[in-house]
Length: 136
Image 1 (cartoon, helix red, strand yellow):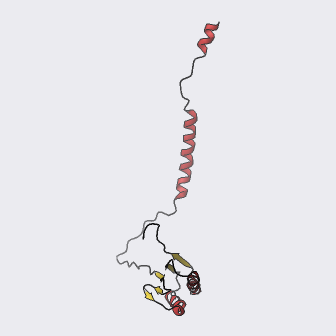
Image 2 (tube, rainbow, N blue to C red):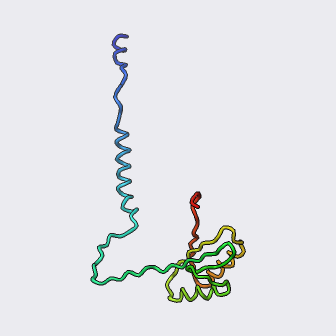
Image 3 (cartoon, rainbow, N blue to C red):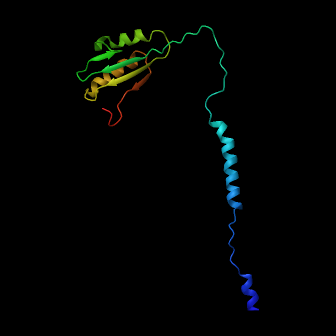
């Protein structure tokens, strides 16, 4: 009897791939369902026009130099005139974005004073321009 019992205890050398296929199919279904939800835009076929005018966005760039001088679009503006100048630039009523470039050695209090003038002029969105490490 021992001879027949030894023959029944063979090693199973086949790999069971059924659980792997099940997991793969579940993942495939999950990705098929979620991928369309990730698209942010809408497919629109735009009409064509014979005459089309593309207006370039007007950007406001404000730079503060090391010696606390203020430049709006490369034109120097005294601190006392800054708020009035920015209000005049944003008088059209549409939301404007201001890009702020400040020297790293400008006193913090002066930067806060300039930022206060920016907010007082009605500009809500301010982008800070910086350098990446190693790109001097």
